[in-house]
Length: 197
Image 1: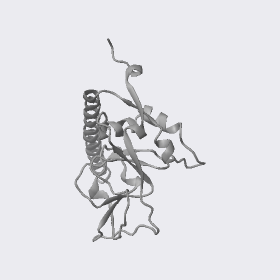
Image 2: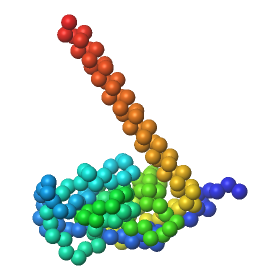
Image 3: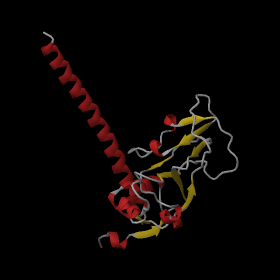
Image 4: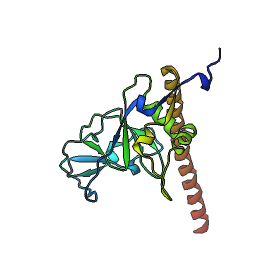
């Protein structure tokens, strides 16, 4: 029997993750090289699968009790504008999510963080997100609405196939980008030599 989408399991995000709001800073973030806290913001979520902790803003800030500290395997998704997701893979304990993002902390063993990111960033995932957007020119998604987004959940082995395909796509795209830069540099150099004869 062929395994079709209609036969796949679907669950609301609230049944597979704990949804946590980011931390609201009372003042603008001031980057400091010797900062004790790293901050994840919307701008830190790229088309890559993972959030790079080496690129995060460092600040000096005393954090009191908060649920916004990020753990390994947490999925981070933006609150407004472009609704992109990324997963944190690392061991740092001093990373906090800003109020511009939500933390999705998977507690359902049937879903890998990487698959959840790929799904949320996919056409199907974005279509689900769009059903719940509110606001004017800049759309936002409320936490209660994010919790009700449906996620298609294939079996774990199929999720891993999807994750591997996605990683291969990223690696291939990186190689193509490098080749494109090289070709452009060769062309520019050749044109420059001809024009400067």
